[in-house]
Length: 160
Image (cartoon, rainbow, N blue to C red; front, top):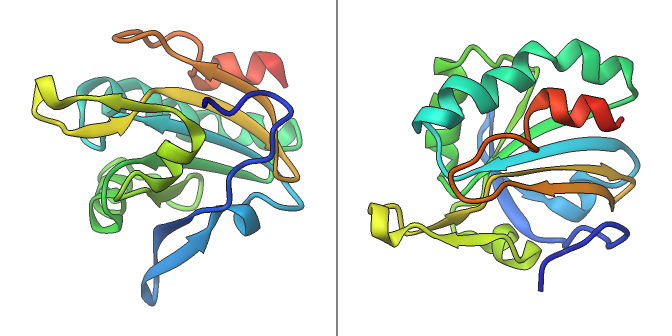
């Protein structure tokens, strides 16, 4: 079942690279007590994700913060090492938290898994963006396959 507006975000263990190495992150704790924009995408280093999706949230970070967003996070079904390397390659710095859902546990719990086996990608996340306020989904925009319209930084900003 797909999580919908008004639902509590699932509490799942994912990974994040820190100065001390890979650390477990509980999504229930991470999204509690703050306003968070999470955008998810099929894969690090992929064309649309690298050219448009991630850079848009890096570029619009200050605008998102002005609208009361405490944390901007990028989530993908990749491991923490890949997400860290991609963040460095994209000069993300501390503007976007690079979250690794390596086993797809959060993606499955959200009901937003896509089958990319036809492209040699395995099971990945659909492309989407959501606003979470104190652990509750306030908006969720899921892209149609092959599209990049409703999950951009500009689209999220227009709804805040």
